[in-house]
Length: 101
Ligand code: SF4
Image 1 (spheres, helix red, strand yellow):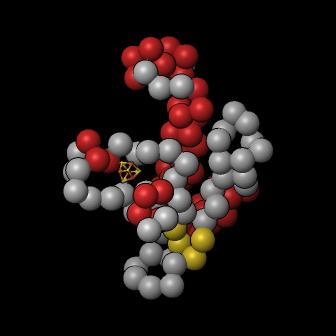
Image 2 (cartoon, helix red, strand yellow):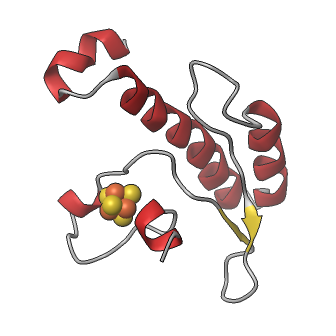
């Protein structure tokens, strides 16, 4: 499927697998939150994708605790979510640019 999309989106395989990696992890995390099972979803996502050695996936869940605010955990994306194409002045909450500042 990624090979079929590649010519249309003009991105390399590592970038596309990075998007898949983030969307699997963050999709499970999001659904877990909706169902009131965020802790379980984060644990399952961490078990499913524990780290960068899970080729062709590009990274792991790598959740870390958040000390303040409503969220209890966050992570840093391995790919860009393209949120800037919708709201250029805002960051997504797992943006690598925001997390490194
Ligand atoms: S918030 Fe970060 S990850 Fe999301 S689109 Fe912007 S630069 Fe990419």
